Structures are given as structure tokens and as C-alpha cells.
Length: 153
Image (cartoon, rainbow, N blue to C red; front, side):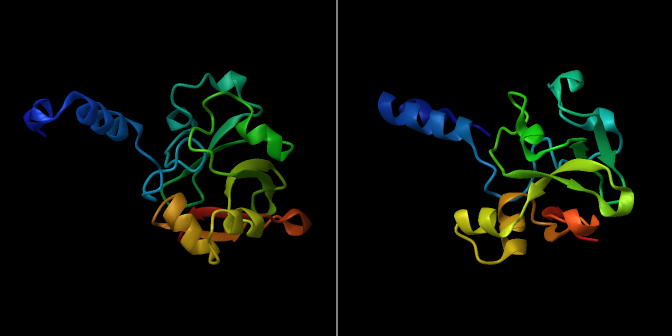
């Protein structure tokens, strides 16, 4: 995009425009960053982060549409323990995935997280904050079930 018109703006206004454009946000509901990111293999996940620094082994869950980047965990605090791991501040939980019993990090859509973001519908929250193709569902892990944002399908 040609932004030659930018040089005609007064300097303070041009600076504000440039800074606002550079900051961006994840509120467009299009692409999760790190956890929840689409993948085919674990190597696609957590780009720019040394996988050995994360609190568990990195995985690409291929049992969800387009894959889902995550890593193993033992508690919620493991999910955003490394600088840069959760750059958008999306709440995450450590939960079992289906009946595997393995604990993994997921984007949370639990009632408290949904309400604190000003939403009443958990799927609308996932679609607005994580990805327009995501829904809120149970992890399916028995008594340790958590509500998480995952691709529909």
C-alpha cells in the first residue's frame, strides 16, 4: 500500500498514525498467537520461542480442524510462564484433552473469563477474541473438564 500521503500530515499526527498501525490487536478474532494457532506439526508452534523453555512438551493437536498448538502442563500457571508465550494476554487453562488424561494448555472460555471480557455468550467470546471459526466447548476430560476455545468441527 502506498502511504505517500503520510508525509503530508503534520509530524505529530503522522507519528500517532504510525504507532497505532504498528501496535495492532488480536481483537479481530482471526488468528490466535501461540496456543491455539493452526499447525500440522509441533515445529509449527510457538515460533520465536525456544521450546525447551516452555513448561511442557510442545504439541500440535491434529484431532481438531487445522491443528491446535499447545504444550503439556500441570497447572494453569504453566500456560503463560515464558516471556512472549502469551503476547495477546488471552486467558489460558491447563486441562485434560478428551479421554487421554494428558494435561495441555488451551485458550479459556470459562464463565469468569468470558464475563470479565464483557461477553455473555462463550462462543461469541471465542469467535471475537480467538478466531472466527472457534467455538467454546468442554475439553472432555472427565471430572477435570474445562471450557476452552477450539476450532469448530
